[in-house]
Image 1 (cartoon, rainbow, N blue to C red):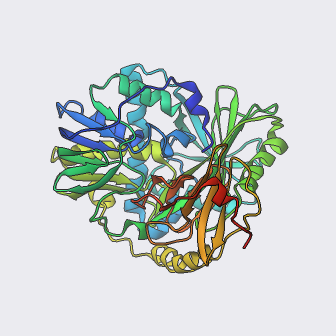
Image 2 (tube, one colour):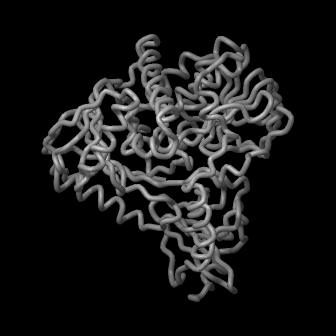
Length: 486
């Protein structure tokens, strides 16, 4: 996968892989901001805390975020009002406001050098979006968000300004937390299943009094069909130095494809061009869309970084946070706004473990009913997506080193990837529900358009909802060279 800019700002900390059975008071599964925040919030409650992650720290959504710390989440509050009503919409706002305030509190208390800065937030009109701004401002007024319609020197010049938002370097922040924690961390440790408060990994089992699942998708057998409630989405990011600069602030438009902007020092970060994974698109086109905006409006000549990220959006826009089972907890479904949602989730889970009342618990509980129009629409489209994905393949002709394709051989789809030394062939069928995988030419991964699972070119699972690696087809280089066009 393409590396985000954040990884070049930190020195990697090495952690071991789990190779034996262990016992712990608290097991946290997930090496991103949710998992590490949970460890921080519960550090005084448990003597022995263990965190495990399937790959390395931060390599999920956290390492590929744009790290806007805000409760201004694009064009959302008007939709929430219509879908959920004012009471739950206000809870969503207050939940994310709590996350923003808690991050700032921790940065100041722990004196973490993470480039945290308070900035204004602007919901902007990029392309004839003035009606959306009026709708959103009306929703702001009803639930108590302080916002003003203003004129700015960007795009259509109309925007809703919300003061006292923020942005930071997420990996510097999390590095700072880890340095202040006395916990055990194991990387490259995949949890295969959880039974009776025991997590079984590839190389050992972990007995825990409490378990928190802080992965982007729930890894739990009684998962209540979360794949029907979480819509996978892909967003893209490009970075470069602008010759035409604007106010150092957070910006986001209201319509898809969205455009969002923030600064990191003197580098402008443009993100958006988002789409659901079922809407199969060429990543090159999405990057081009953002780069064209950078060139046209801000005179960016050289783009120093580009990457993509995958997020899960719940069908009612609200996160799933709370108790799954006795002493097992979940936090997921942040809908692209993981910085504030994750930290607020860690506070909610802390209260649940301590058996304290929390006003957000009922609204965001994992097993709540979400049988709304978005639920039925998304799931009715999945059958079409599965059928469509099975029909997509390419001719093999010749695959250069560093390239891959989906081919069809003997009426079956295979993924073929070649590096400098060998050819890798895998069954290009997702191990979750059998959807046909697509080869991502930018990240060099096999991606599921149905529910968002991602696999490395050698078939190893990167992230779910799938739980198993792809079937690897053993083949020699000589045999691979005999593969013919279909």
